[in-house]
Amino acid sequence: MAQLSVNLDLVAAMREVRRLGEPDPCQAAVLAELAGADGIAVQLQRHRRFVRDRDLYLLKGIVKTKLAVEIPPVDDVIEKILEVKPYLVTFVADHADTDAAVSPIDFNAAAVDFGSLAAKFSAVGVSVAFFIEPDPEQIRGAAKSGASAVLINCSRYAGARTLDEAQSELDRIDRAVRAAAKAELAVHCGRGVNYKNIRPLVELGVVDEFFVGYAVCARALLVGFDCAVREMLTLVQTPVSQS
Image 1 (cartoon, rainbow, N blue to C red):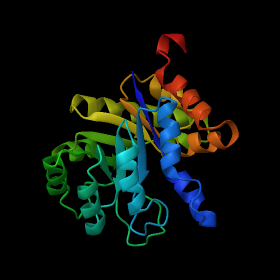
Image 2: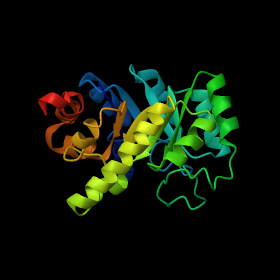
Image 3: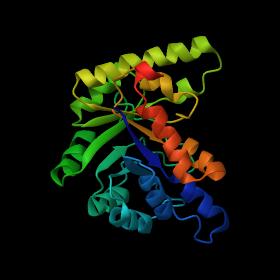
């Protein structure tokens, strides 16, 4: 059965709007776990505008399930995560422009020695994943770099405008996740996954964990964190035969 980790970046972004200390990602983490979430995820960016170093220390002490942190391969960020030691670190592509959107790693063009970075984190007991496009070639790159998991970018599937386009992207994801499973990598899916489009991904039967942030946090504004997380868990955990 697939698991669900709730990404709390939107909570941190909302806190930044008024800069009053609320809402607190740590409080949201507690509520998400009480509702049954299997993990908590955040992203630590260069600028620290949303999730801050202090949040990491607090979350490490508060989270009872597992804490996953997405980071760019930037020295000061790497040093901070090596100190905090979350359960999982997921590398994303770095952008000198701190306002640029996070993007998947392209192992064909990467100027970073991800193999050495993965070994460094593995040595201190932190699992390593890479955020990549659903491409078997990128799967191979992640495996060669010492990953224990891959986070598959589902944004093109989520943004499909027609059923045919959505099915084409779903087929692409299907091929990629099966290649990852064959390479003995844990399969994670995220980016754009929501209450309406997650079931076809669940029905692939290969995804180990879903990382969902925006959809859950947006839903929580209307029904509360408990209900929002439970609704998503129902979609993730309902067996295919009962859908």
